[in-house]
Amino acid sequence: MYPSRFRYEAPSTVAEAVAMLAAADGEAKILAGGQSLIPMMKLRFAAPEMIVDINGIGGLDYHRADPDGTYRIGALCRHADLEKSAALADAQPTIAAAAPVVADPLVRTRGTLVGSVCHADPQGDWASVMVSLEGAIVAQGPKGRRSIQVADLIDGPFQTVLAPDEIATEAVVPAPRGARAGGYLKLERRVGDFATVGVAVSVEISGGSVARAGIGLTGVGPATINASDAAAALAGTVLDASAVDAAAQLAAEAAQPRSDHRGSADYKRHVVATFVRRIGAQIQRSEQEAA
Image 1 (cartoon, rainbow, N blue to C red):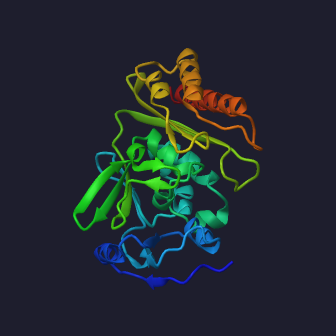
Image 2: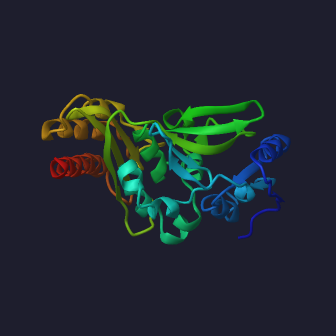
Image 3: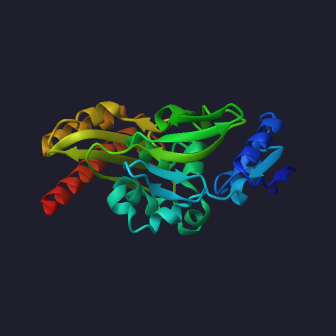
């Protein structure tokens, strides 16, 4: 099926893009990677009157660490840019673990982390990763810029609190309180499939104990789940087996899966707990090897 008719605009600055969105009165969509928007338009699940293509805006394709350790990912940074980054594994291990398992190589070449987060697909990988890292999205609109925690950004399946005249310009991960460790595990029926279950775990270790922890869940609820009680079970511990097991059980309880052709709700909760334990064991091994 062909998309319905639309007007195409290609601004050269963020300010131009914001003005176009404001003029469209809620009837425009941003095109960055297009790996979610274009299929939805072809199926006519989305029929915007205007497409605002931001690929001509310079300076949005970065991912970098600030001197204080804050990590920034621009709106045009592709999944493949993160996947191929040699420096990312040390700076952001949870992001580095997720990048190679997002969709398939074709999608990773064009798709963007910021676009994926803002698409708010409950089975999308990046939102749970950003939730685990206490990450935020920076949005720019007619009234200026604002930072929105990803945990607060997503308002439901495919819904966010972004205003129709706002454009997400970057994702920001705050500076760590210790050495970063973590991972992302995903259960999928075949390579490139949406997640049946995805689990992101991020910890920051200082003085031998966990200074901060975060756990995000993909595909086991109507939206990305911030398993905050599970993360709290890790904070202040030495990340031993008992702490990881407690976090795994709480993460499974936080999940809200439905039984379907991919598996029963109980099975998906079991996978959540198993993935938390596996990532915890990976972190423990890495810490022992580094000691």
